Amino acid sequence: MNYIKNPQQIEQNSFVIIGDIIAEQRPDYHFASEMHEAVIKRVIHTTADFDWLDILHFSPQVLTHITEGIQRGCTLYTDTTMAMSGINKTLLKQMGCECRCYISDPRVVEAAPQQGITRSMAAVDVALAEPGEKLFVFGNAPTALFRLLERHATPLAVIGVPVGFVGAAESKAALAESELPCIAALGRKGGSNVAAAIINAILYQLRGRNE
Image 1: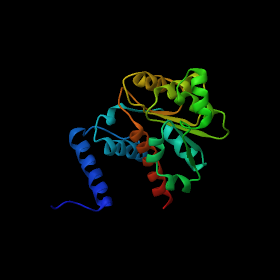
Image 2: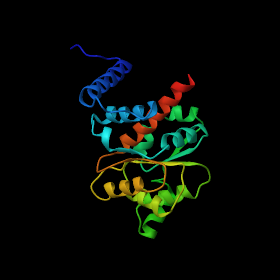
Image 3: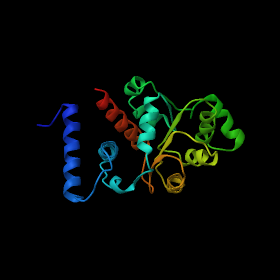
């Protein structure tokens, strides 16, 4: 069988196809910036879903908040180990950043049943108690997003793309309507893979600027 075996060529060809489809089917669609384009195209690449052209909400200046925070060495907090696993840790480390997930932390495991809350909520509480600039990356747990909003926290930004049918759309709508700098998926779609893709797109763009 004849097929492409080079992973870089596969990815490159995929992005060419994505660009061609957008140009053909959405000729009037305009990206706000190169970073905005990179994020949306990588999410489409991850999901093969062009709905992301319309359902990914960006608050004003959120990409600036995130890129500057990463360049200052902020800490990322994910709601799942899957999201953390999908983020390019090599690039993150080169930027002086760290990624943490407390879903299985003993403090969280103990606190959640004691307080009658989800572990995702307890993990947010643990994260908020730590010093330093925080970037929250949620792809699975609406309760984590609700908890963050309830706490009236002021992280540098929030990526809120929980997927699902119970509370997912509502939590993301609440985030989009808040004053927090955010990237939020509107509706039920999302996922840990989408959350990781957003971060990776930003990291790859920053790497390109530094080369």
